[in-house]
View (cartoon, rainbow, N blue to C red):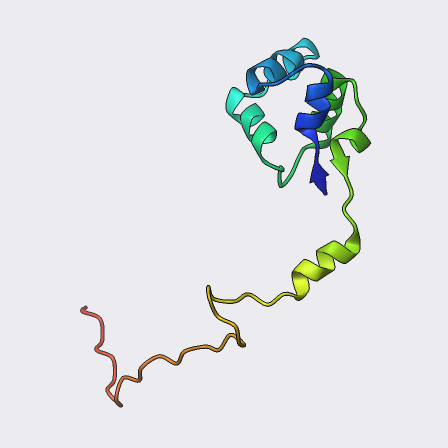
Length: 110
């Protein structure tokens, strides 16, 4: 999902999180300024449905304006890429731990 809060807010001439907080308070939504700033700067991992409803009421938009579905092919491409170390061109291989040389671990003190 693509989070379009800044774009939707800009259509209402809102350019800062403090201005967005004022718009939220007009409809009875009273989050903290830090929560508003987090919504403003990042794509949220979760949003409560009642909060989403109040955000849409404050910005006079729909949920479809706030969130835009990304194509499934793009998401699948990202999953198929294996994680690699920086500068590594070949396959990622685990490095074995050095053995203890046959010694047993010491018991913890009583």
